[in-house]
Amino acid sequence: MPATRLWIKNPLALFTANEQRAPGGLVIEGGVIVELLGAGQAPARPVDSTFDAREHVVLPGLVNAHHHFYQTLTRAWGPVASVSLLDWLMTLYPVWAGLTAEQLALASRVALAELLLSGCTTTVDQHYLFPDGLEQAIDIEVEAVRELGMRATLCRGSMNLAKPDGGRPYRRLEQDAEVILADSARLIDRYHQRGDGAQIQIALAPCSPFSVTRELMRDTAVLAEARDVRLHTHLGETPDDAAYCLRRHNMHAVDYLKSVGWLGPRTWLAHGIHFSQVEIDRLGAAGVGICHCPSANMRLGSGICRTLQLEVEGAIIGLGVDGSAANDTSNLMLEARQALYLQRLRYGAAAITPEKVLGWATRGSARLLGRTDIGELAVGKQADLALFKLDELRFSGSHDPLAALLLCGAERADRVMVGGRWRVVDGRIEGLDVAALIAAHNQAARQLIAG
Image (cartoon, rainbow, N blue to C red):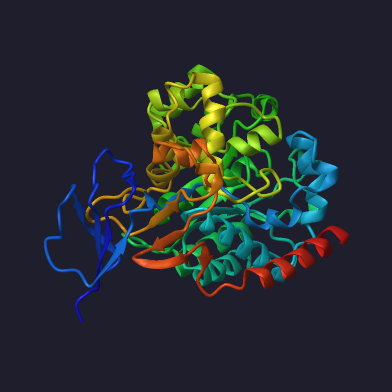
């Protein structure tokens, strides 16, 4: 049978993330965008159905480039509500060490559902906790992604250097390097999809250079090169990062990346705040990407990423919500608003426009993942869309629909499409009992804290 053709017609506003204009909307066939239409233009061939988008602002599906799903279970926990990163980690590691498979499944579904409702169609998760009984953590996340119908790059994280050995993790969360590398290869072989339209991809992601050995960092890069997958880690989040590299490795952070084979376009880093100008130059020249996580950076008092300087030197910038114990939400549209305001503190209002920030949240984040099939609206791209209405009180009196999304605080999409299929309709996720999920997740969160 021929593929169904759908016309998303005459949107209130449409952002393509690539400077193309399509006031007449777009046509979707077989899960792919096949036409962008000018004002008054009709599709080249008859369509099977039409969606009248006159009340909707249409965006490419948002792409979240950094997250930790499991942390939805420890949101707004009193003992870490007002501490900086290191104390936050050291207090939470003993709690997270008790994470179970059932709890991770619930946490993942909550994180994905919240992202989807915010207009996010593709997400990253960096999972680095594998206590006894949770060896299949990434497999659990795969099932949750499939259930919600989203796309994901699932990062096989790792920690093999505990605090007594000079690292930061809790002893019970360590794994042997051989186990980590073997499981990384297994996950790539079993789940990693290549080419346009991939739903599940795998990346390799040691938690940070402060929680794994130099040998594991190097061997992970070798495996990623051999299997052609991407590399991800935290770096430059706090001044402690730079001090640690100098103390333990007698070199600056970017020198360390180069020494272990990570300084290249396969790599994207979370946070990237505390780099010198020389390091920024080198990161940009190497094509390393940076995922800006403004809410977590403000919440933990970590600092402000120098996004524009990184971009000028050639680095790719994307956005991520980070973990829900540091944000404490999984809402990428709210994250874009935070990025707009935080970056204006550094660069001024004229330099940081709504269009620039929405570009980071779409095409920029997609480029961090090495994907060219998502993150923008163009012929041949995947039909991943987020549609927002401006009919709430917060938007009353607004004039520029695109600017209103960020300036007036949009937080929930009316409709979300992934690969040509509606996943959110009238602000609700198709087939998901959200009330039941909240009840089960709250119970799991209490159990995890109680130990």
